[in-house]
Image 1 (cartoon, rainbow, N blue to C red):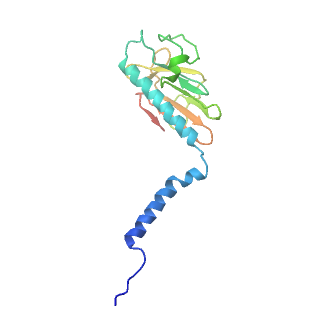
Image 2: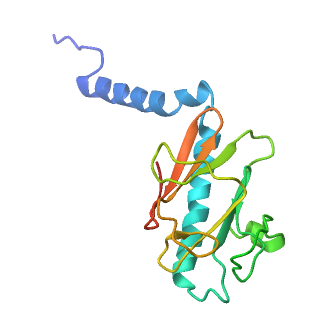
Length: 179
């Protein structure tokens, strides 16, 4: 008479351990708080706005008709109410109406304490803090330029700060990335 063994096979045990590892790595941090989630979401949205404006600047090269300018304030990043680009413009208002929903705008949520700041370097640290609101745009090569059209030779770094600090770097050549 044969004895039947009961229990788990080695394969079943390994599968269970792998599944527990995946669940613990993805689900458990959500249970212990959401520190940093607002900042990373804001970073992703702002990178999207920056890249979209940059791509438009490279495709629509007629600066007499199109203005690929952005404004950064302490609470928002978006398309200012300027058309065409005016080097002497100091308008710090975002375009109202349809453009607010065009994907070219990030506004800090009303109940959020996110802070935005700008530095004149694309390095993860250092640089001089720039006064906000700050107007800049992209040229037809995708490079960040001043309101007057001069290439920003050191690049830019936007910092999103609350519980955790996240950074967006815009390199002199136009590469936009988290840093």
